Image 1 (cartoon, one colour):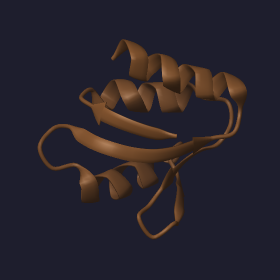
Image 2 (cartoon, rainbow, N blue to C red):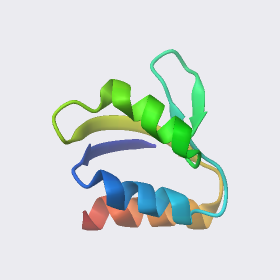
Image 3 (cartoon, rainbow, N blue to C red):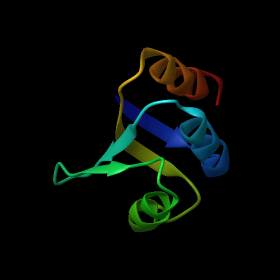
Image 4 (tube, helix red, strand yellow):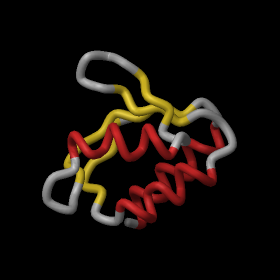
Length: 77
């Protein structure tokens, strides 16, 4: 799923951390990084986080309830 306009990074990571299954960031090269790993969160987003917002990410969640959490975050953010 494409996720756009993330303004509250801490809240986004809070949602990711609350997910029960894997949540992965898909890089432009097609690599998949585990977003539940704090190291991956900092390393991967340091490269795309420049002005306080993240314009677009492609993320993959495997559990239906995790997808619902992420969609709910995007709708209510």
